[in-house]
Length: 394
Image 1 (tube, rainbow, N blue to C red):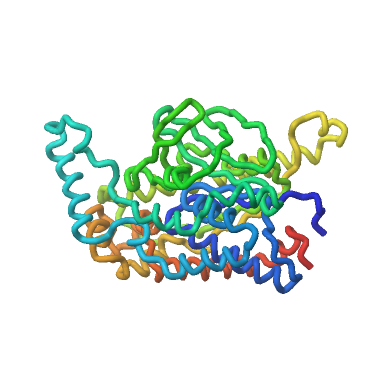
Image 2 (image 1 turned 45 degrees about the vertical axis):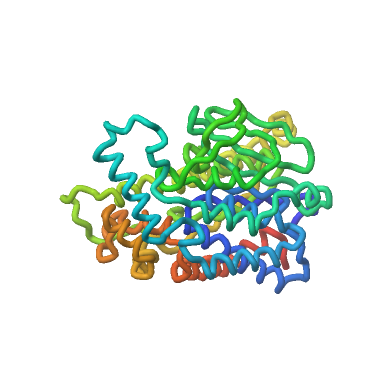
């Protein structure tokens, strides 16, 4: 049985459209809980998110008093997603965006005024409207006072000094932490923190926030995130569920590829995004597992003298390659987005290398997100026993 004093933490990682998978996992988990008991409370006292995972995390935290209802609403959004809800995908806006980039590349040496320089490949203004409709940060103080939530953390990367910053809001005062190239800052979380955390480099614009050293421009929180699990531990979690967005247990892509052709921009971008979003999680999970094993070898009295404590971790990540799923549905992308990807070298007719990776992060269309949610539910069912044991659900 779970100790009543345990503090459960939830960590939702970044991954653009891949974050639909996380919602499927959580939906299946709630079905498992309903089969075990009638508890409908928020099972996670500490919720942390990065990039698109921060969006899911914030929506759930802001509706923590009605967790299952909030999760169902979030599920409906992902189930019916369209790209225009995240970024402008109409032909005129795409032409304007493309023209600015072409001008910069061809005539950049003539452009002396900053106002003419493009800030990002895509305009994600619609995402801001979507967030304001589904995440009410003004509810957080009341939810925390009523005991529905202990802390919420959103991570972002400071473009000005390269540091990784965790912005957090908590029920009780928690001392901020400073580590090499990463630190934390208590604050009143707002939608601007979400826009910054989900600002995929080059693709979506950065946001200006008040940081630990003053105002600065912040982008996607997955960049330089060397310790994704750390915020939940600092905020008091004893047991942590981590839901990834790929690569941890994905089978290798054994499809034959042309290794003589120079990689396209989409190939390189897909590889870069996979490194930004996914690689640090595997390293941090291994680090935590090693620490837990080491602590078991230390006598209890000596362990109490250190600041280290064992943390139970449950990781759930996709059992299938999400880039392969994206490629299967590539024909369903908006025409303008499809043409943009083709210009960058991402062709639905090819399955080589990282060809589908770049696409998988921007594929905010229901035909793709629905399959990711279904995969999330399938993977959670496969770990039903581990999930019940983790939460103490009989």
